[in-house]
Each structure stands twice: as structure tokens, then as C-alpha cells.
Length: 239
Image (tube, rainbow, N blue to C red):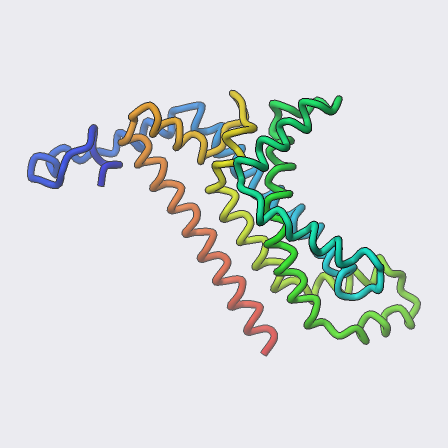
């Protein structure tokens, strides 16, 4: 409602007469919004892809191997879920201010934070899918002369696709809404949509905030519908 008003008004005839699309038009012409959209899409796609690739390999180690440290690996992959986002942001900020690695103030530090934060979700998705894959398929591939890397890429990953896609969609959807860690690590030029929404709220620009919020809702709904379509497609193929 407020995204179509020049300023917030309770529903009334006067408010209906004041409805406008100016808030949405202003968003289109703001360089900050363009940059935030680009950063959010880049971080969402990159972090979700990296998380799922890492956790696919980690899930294989935990489920398939007898490596003595696999329990610790599983614990470390799941432990970020117990750390508040603000605390995680402060920890990463302190770490990279201490280390001689020049990524503080860049989008790469946000990418690292997102990957760490969403590892638990990717790990659960890949682990559950890995348990459903028969080990005999890997053994048959190896007996045919295939290398481990070939077996992993051509046999395991295709069978992991349903869980992989579900985890990927979950991570990218939640990365668009991530605020607590991002607000500790961003600077001018690396803003994401959640940070811009917070700044608009802090500045009292509620009509613009509402318009941007509605735009973000539309994006997340579109991603969710895409997830439903992909899930239905794979479910039909497996029947």
C-alpha cells in the first residue's frame, strides 16, 4: 500500500486519489539500487553455487569414506548455524583486518561470509541425497576403469541434482534477505538489497523502502516458483 503513496496515509478516498508509481520510477533511476541489485545477484548466485559444490564433496567424504576426521568435518560444516549473523560478521571482520589479505571492504569478504553462513543448509541437503545413492554405482564405475574424479562428476553429481538444486534455491533465496552479517562487512560500493532497505528505513524514506521491499518480494517469489517447477520436473523424471 505505502509503496504507491508519496507518503504514508491510512486507507481513504484521499489516499486512493494519491496513488502513484513514482516510488518505483525513482528506484529505476537510483545508481545505488542498481549496484545493490547487481551485488545481491552476484553474491546469491556465487555463494549458493560454491556452497553446494563444497558440501557435495564434503557430504561424499562424510557418507562414503572411513576417514577418521569425517565426524569433525560434519560438525564444522554444521556449526555456523549456531553462530548469530552479527557475531559471524564481527569475527570475519576482525580476522581479515588482522591477516595480510586485502579483501576487507570488497565484495569478496561478503562472499566468504555467505558461504560460511549457509554451509549447514547445503550440507544437510547434500548429505540426505548422498545417503540415497547406492555405493554399488560408484564401485561399478571404478571397476570399469573410471577415475574417482570422473565417477564423482559423471555419476554422483547427476544423482545429487534434486538435493543440489533444492539447497541451491534455499541458499540464494535466503542470501537476498541476509542483513546481520552484511551490515558488518559492507562499505560504499558493496551494498546489498537488505542493507539498502535498512538504510532507507533508518532515513525515514518509507515509500521508497516499501517499493524496494515489494520488488524484492517479487524476486523471491519468482525464485520460489522456479524451485517448485524444477522440483516437479525432477520428480516426474524419476517416476
